Length: 301
Image 1 (spheres, rainbow, N blue to C red):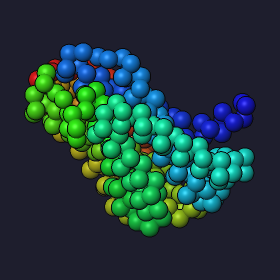
Image 2 (image 1 turned 90 degrees about the vertical axis):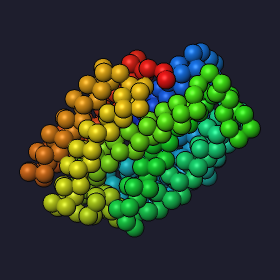
Image 3 (image 1 turned 30 degrees about the vertical axis):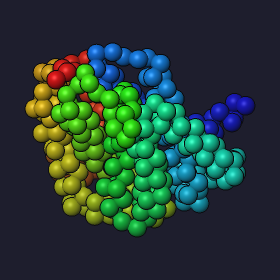
Image 4 (image 1 turned 135 degrees about the horizontal axis):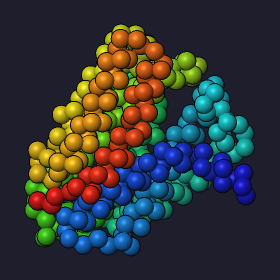
């Protein structure tokens, strides 16, 4: 049983899944705060549904890449390439999680459930095959990677047919708030994933993955990492600009973005794995910290 739990955690990429669920949960609480009432049972349903849907997407990803995972040191111990789990077992688990998670989210809010289905499809069946073909895969993957805030936010509202019941919230707020949350998470992914791609480039090459902007660890890729890091500065001002982020969030976001930019400059100058790791580790901390502070410093409008 202990081995199955360990393999299941690797199949669903537990740390990544928990990060996604955290992002959706924070957005749910922001949407609920706008309405003036947090329904914690619904929050629990979102957490469960989000975990299952994300786990399903990651499971499908590992089924498709099972032979490629055998070639990389960082993935060869996953349950499928190691032979501890069969493709059939992984498929049954992934399909079950996908259906169960979607049903939970659809019953919570139809739009949230619809977005979750789109997210699974785009991540597993578009982004995953593209990773071997073109660096455009990172741009495509950034879309499902930024959808959890939308899923979480809309899950806080009651469904009204194909729309939302938001009598207590302005129409502007219902459109702008989740869009800004999406944009922040979308742009964050580029310094995050390109830094990881730089650090793991040798491993990725064994599987034929082409994830760096120019497919190589050259000046062009370093420039793109720097630009994507610097873009986090204006992106962090969006919540305040649109009236729902306070000064505390803006200052913390600016500090994080300046760290991104400073490490981006260092990486542009040295182009070393150590400088890419500084960007990578900054990205690990930036998103959960700023999301949590935004929730605490949120100003309904």
